[in-house]
Image 1: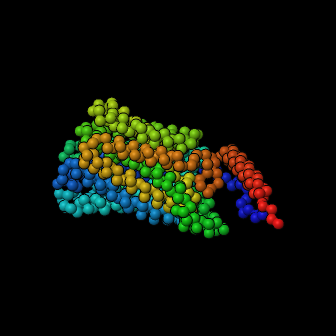
Image 2 (image 1 turned 30 degrees about the vertical axis):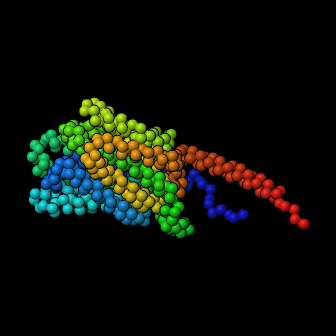
Image 3 (image 1 turned 90 degrees about the vertical axis):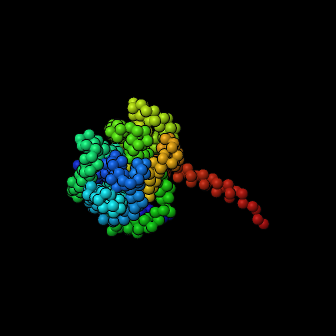
Length: 494
């Protein structure tokens, strides 16, 4: 019988998470995510102004589509950034790469506020805007997946959903701050001042925010899981890690499809609600810009409250139920929700948007705890970054595509049909995915918050192995029975 190379798991093999380092890493990652979504919030809520500043000689409808296109096109370069930053992050460390992405991202956002208008430099103006957005997309390609990896690798197994939920909590805070600043400037400044120079202020603020986030990541330590991986490079496991990267598609194809499905469902619905909805309310339903902004901001505040609760509950009952609840909700209730939104009554509009937001929360509250659990440490960053940024292209073109569908068909329910399709994809993905709650990250040992939890995890690990051994014993008995049946059927030869 071959001798196993695996040694028994010992209590000392289970990492105990340093609470201070966990908090520092979580808040640093949430803050960097807030900066990313601060820009999304500012850009989407200023789309109507950006359209007039950079594309002044076309109709208002085309201006909106053009402004949203400069938002969508950079998503096509995000996979390149994801692959490059992901590979570097899997080799030299997560925190170093996140620091680099934040510098590029904050500088790009800052530069948007410096670009002269179309009336000043002509066609060069929208070209510069597109170039800056491309640089921004390249850096963002490595930011979100890196932040999700850091938070997941720092989190204890039994709290990964709750802690991971704070990452998109940061996204929503950044979006609210960006949108709130736009509302504040709209109320404070005259229309001429806002269109002349006021719109630049939110973009310029991104630079000091980026500096703060850079410092937070620069002083943060690498995750214990990645440090273990670095140590393993000097052992016999290194050949195994190299081959894993080469075989990622063939070995993890099921995980790749589930990961892509989750990214599409989460981000298409999220972007449609937060990036497209303000323009939909203002341009298609003729609400004052401030009314549309305030509705979305109020909804976002509600999502903030629900976000950590979803993550906490997923640690108790699992992630899969929430994916199915959110997906079925979008499939069945998107059309009724848009009936409320199109009712021309503010309370009903608010209710319709809230219904959509509630189901979207089911995704945003847990996605950062699901994706990192699908891949081993040596390829975790690069795998998530590559798949996430390829799949998110669908989400990136959503605002532009839905705006075009509404304008070309005149059908105000096109966004509802779009969300129903997304809901169907979510249902299929939800049934296909494996449960990741209360389990270690793929290919790693269990991680605990304290020694008592480590002892409990060790006991669970023992019971799990015992169950697997019993299953194997039963399979062996069945095979032995089948073997004997075949032996008994041997023909008698003279």
